[in-house]
Length: 315
Image (cartoon, rainbow, N blue to C red; front, side):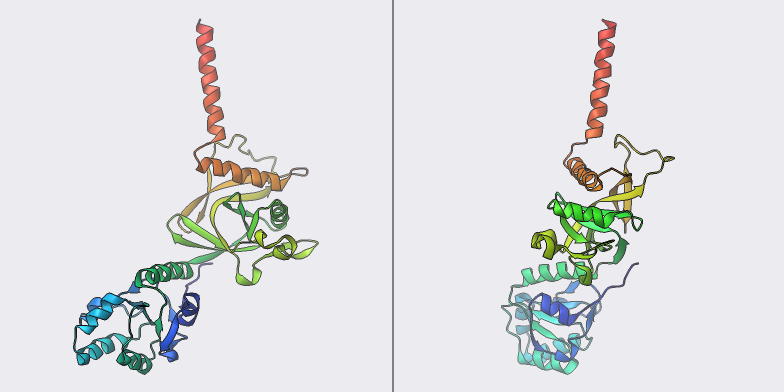
């Protein structure tokens, strides 16, 4: 399920610790684009390509440029921008906000905020925050854990044992991200982040036991808010008719948005320790990321042994 994302100006202000100085009437407005605008050319009077959906960020350069103009022209240029109703305007810490700017913000209901930081840090933090908050999202039925630093998404049919496996792994000092419902979003090509819905954070659902709060049971270190997904493990009932990869040479993948993530299928049988298998799969995949593939190394060793035996036979 993909969602069209937007976020309120009020929430952005709270997350970035911005101080409201005018335009409170527009505080509940929504932001739906991640790009920002530095209104230099707009203050010069060129509005042909002005995008009013973007947050305006005003730093020392824009402020000093305005001061080069007479006060009447300053007001006209600022009003020409604010009458398009941008979501809000953010001033960096070193900018003195003119009174006419405050009056126009109140007139047009455009929130004006003052930051405690300089322009570049504000720009970086705001863009990163908007990119994460507005990224397309989808929901996956599964359990996400941090295993040896590897974001490992466990999927499979209901009742296969995903949550029970997760509980055993958490008891081994691995970390829960989300259980049952994992919300994923793509911050950049190839980077998928998973997290739990706020209402489900910290909780596991174990059939026969009920809801378990892993933080209360095992401590604050048992949970983290989000993690990059680097491996997908599918648990499935053993199928005698299916040929399972025994060496690990075959490469499966699981697509989330446009990103392909390595996938391992683990068949479930009585007596197999699912937690140990998942833990081993995550560590083995981590070694692959670090450049070591045990299966390929074994094949090379066998090939070298066969070659050396052939030379011995010739002698």
